[in-house]
Image (cartoon, rainbow, N blue to C red; front, side, top):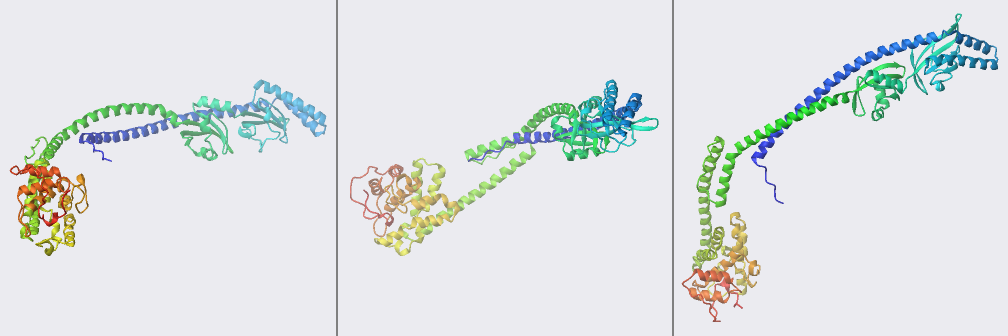
Length: 566
């Protein structure tokens, strides 16, 4: 998988500037949102505090009115008389008369309730037992109220199975005798909660420490009011309920019950936050537009001289010529300094490359001369093979870099013979089968030698494979046809040609014409026909017509004594 190209400088600069602007705007947005929330929270708390004071005063007045009203009702003479008779009949243990008097008391109580329409109007006897109850919610009133009522007249909160009530009571007194107690109760129900919400503009919650009695909060929020949250409400000024932040004030409390007003800070902040968001968005769009224009201009200003330098370098790399120095752009001191440094570096590199190339070629020639010096009959063989191979490669229109690999690879093609014993290499007559097998090891040995020198790696195929034959009978790998690299095929032909045209201890040198005729005879089997044709074309003074004679050359160099061609 190819690696993706890195972004251009213009893109990177623009991204960096826009990212910086985005970070700054994000910080501004967060700061603004926090400031808006703090301001809204303060406003909601102040508003709720004012509403709390107003509701507290109103509830105090309601409590006073409830106390005054029940005190006045307790002075009803008819009610007193009925209750006095009931007490007398009960004391004389006359059940029938007592039930009749209870009905009389209930009728009198109903008459009073019909005028004032209370939620509950109840009358208890001196023992605290309920004698009669009237009013809208009379059905759920208990026979005996929980808790001692004593002589208290101030309203108090009362929790009953039927719900919560605000209760005020007054003694029914006849001639200094307390006949019983009249109770007037206002239900703390949904209607009461809605009235408070209408007055305060906030939500109302009536609850104990473990359960919600009634509330005007949304159902989704009310469902989140667990016992832990309810227990924390009496001391809380701000609480998060169901993911929404609420300001809280306690309006009434007695024992385990409380009445609270709650105002949503999040809902109050939403309009201001939306307005702030729109403002920030407009600022962000304008800022991004300006920053985008500025970043592109700045990036292009920075990138222009760099792009010019990069194009110059690309052109130099494409033509593979580094001689003309790069021209300075004149628009950036830093780029001009970089250009000058590059020109100096390339000059030094060219000098070093020339020295390295000279040393490189000298080393290879020295290796070839060392090998040729072992046998006076092969002196100059590697140089001649190299020259012939280059001539063939040029005729075949090979690339210049291939010509260089061919030149030096041909010089080194027999380097593996350094491992062949002198008595075999210099033997003046025919080789035994064992000796010829020893000779056949030199391509592989040469390849192993070159593998220890990294810069000689391109020449290894020539050294290792220059004795392979198109018909597959060569060595060391018995490759066929195009399996053999072209450069190795070229050296195979030129090596044979020079071997046949050079004198040996066991035979005189053959003429170029004879050697070419032998190459043509074995073309396609032992030698590559295209390469033979190229060699013949590179030697225009020689008769190129292949001979039909079957008389073989008496003996080639020992390397080529592989038998007759097909």
